[in-house]
Image (cartoon, rainbow, N blue to C red; front, top):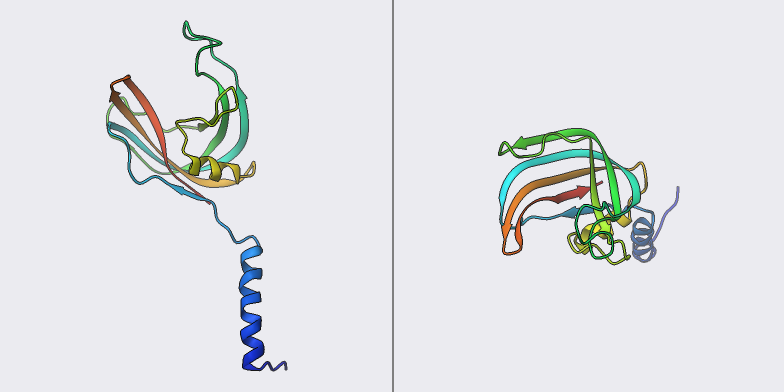
Length: 158
C-alpha cells in the first residue's frame, strides 16, 4: 500500500488537475439566448451528424451574380439524425428537415457575417461524423433592408 504525506499530496493534486484538463475533457458548446426581432415560424431541436465543410459556388440567381453577389462560400453541413423537439408556430414555418447547413465563410474567404465568431469556433472543433445537439429557429424578419426568412442556430453542443 502506498502512503503519501500531506505535503506530497498537496504537490500531487495540482499535477492531477492539470493532467485532467489536458486529457481531452473539453466539450464543444454554443448557445444564443436572445433572438433578433421577427415572427417565429418554427423551432427545431435535433441531434445532427457533422458531415464536414463544403465549398458552394454562386447560384447565379440575381443580376449581381457572379461577381458582386454574396452567394456561395464555405458551409458546414449537418445530417439530422433525429428530432428531440419541433414546433411549427406559423403555417410558413419550415417542416422537419433532413439536413441543415451553416455558412462559415464567404466566397472570398472572409468570415460569414451572419454566423457569430463563437459558433464558427465551435464548428472548427467538430470532426466529420461527430453527432451534436443542433437547435435552430426559423424567423421571418422585417428590417429597413427588406423582409426575409432567417434560420438562426440557437444551440450546438456535444
